[in-house]
Image (cartoon, rainbow, N blue to C red; front, side):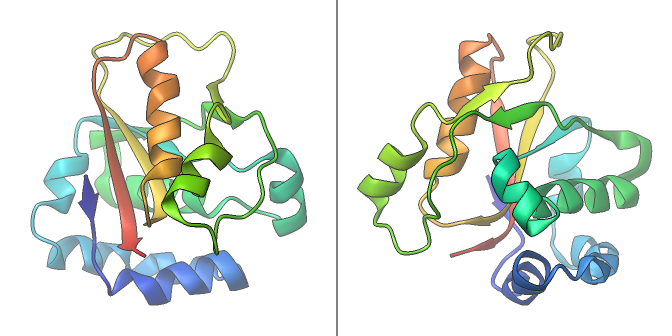
Length: 160
């Protein structure tokens, strides 16, 4: 797992709660200041954590997709973004939940897009805005594991 650090909190709030995509223009500087992050992402497929279609329609965007695309813009041909997961259950927000409740909330909530063909040796890096308990990212990684992918890494902008 790789997390930029607490400096990511401001960017996360601006994106997630205010839809301010422009703050991602600072990702280049963040990558330069976060030793090893660029190298960690290279030669991987960046997969944003999906929102349920109802939440995405209400919010108007998926911040994890924006982050993945912003990182890919800075890394160029060294990464690929694939929006290839779906949230199959519309789960309630986890903001106030404890770890055990979060894990139960997202259990079996994610799936890979039907018909997705990837070599199981591809390096998958799940992209999310924040790592709190890891329940969401664990549930996403489980979907990849069930499809035969051998290793799934995660990267977030911040830690909650």
